[in-house]
Image (tube, rainbow, N blue to C red):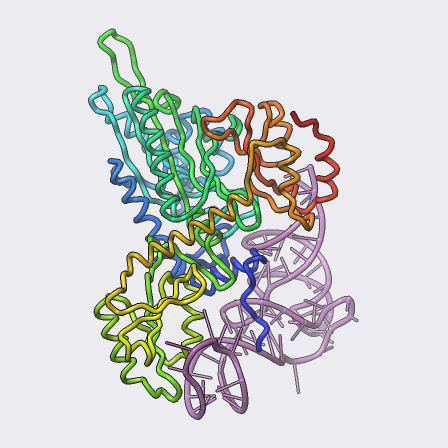
Length: 479
RNA sequence: GGGGCCGUGGCCUAGCCUGGAAGGGCGCCGGCAUUGGGAGCCGGAGGUCGCGGGUUCGAAUCCCGCCGGCCCCA
């Protein structure tokens, strides 16, 4: 018995480190802070995530393009709020070889400025609109806060951004709503629970009129922003002169939106669905949907008949069979770790009866079915639904409202008096929300809610300061 | 923004305080054993002790700087 036991998910920091390494997802030991190496299995999952988002955006009529990583200073700094928001965390290239560049270049932290300069050239009249494009790229942000694998990185490698420009506000708003709906579908199909909030002004995207964000909750109880949709209005179109002359001789500017996700989605999938045995992947992003495990019996007594049967099944269903000489137990262990949704066990019994033993990763227990009853899509759907259900249940247990701030804080502690976190809707005015922001993360208002509902989540400082917070909380005069 | 801890074969780590031939576990390789929930036995290979500088007869160990990781406070 050795000591390097697989950590339980309740020890989340250790668990995630173990899973990222053992399932070959990512390695953050590279000697540049906040930059990670993506390993083969992580890359396969990532490509699944990208493919899913591509399909959803494509259905919405948003086409894929690619813009350069480097942006000239003069272009990068054209929009006032944007540059105020991003200058502190932008990498700059000042030299080419030994020569100092005549104009420094920014390593894109996001692509608005690179793209909108081109929008400007392309738009001469309203007929040139709409422009609706997307890009999958890596972007760089010089994070000053502590970096964390897949959550807070300096090279964001799975940035999927969309940018749209329209002639009228109504069209832009319609697209804005459609983008939110697209993200709902995206997260729903991965079984990731979320809340949608309108961010307070101080937490808007730099240069946006309004930011709507999707937040989920990590097993630690901390909220995680996993997607944002921005209504840019005319801020960028004015800065970049995306405009045309009207018949009345006036100048009209385009209305824009942009929205994006990052590898935080991958972290959410791992962190939210994973269990003590490892990953549990939704079928849409699982590199292996199913695996056949043959069981050869003592001394390989039934090796021949079982191998023949499992190969037949493999051929018939298009599912790989693991014929390596490992014991069945060690194979279960491996495919559990990798989060393969469907496991098919076949031994002598199954071969004799023409049956299969099915084990779904998200469910306890096995079922025996007849060979001709096998329906992979149905099983994947069952597993996905169970994953979603469990995730939703845990999520709902960590949120609530509307309630008073005091009640929300009480609920953030579990029965052991430890801080548990979550996302809560509380009664508060804007002014009070600012006051709360001293103690919790104020996410903003639920979309379409009453003015006096504010959404809060666990902040860093609450986590380990039980005594202080219990001191602070009763002192609040909650409405 | 402030404070603390850490970096030793692929991975986890002992050794550091009190300087004097680098130790263990996992993994890997070879052999044996093992097939309805893994991690058993025997043997073997593998190390710029994060990087750079300093102190010293001698540095993983002490000092300085840098890089990287983790934690806490504001």
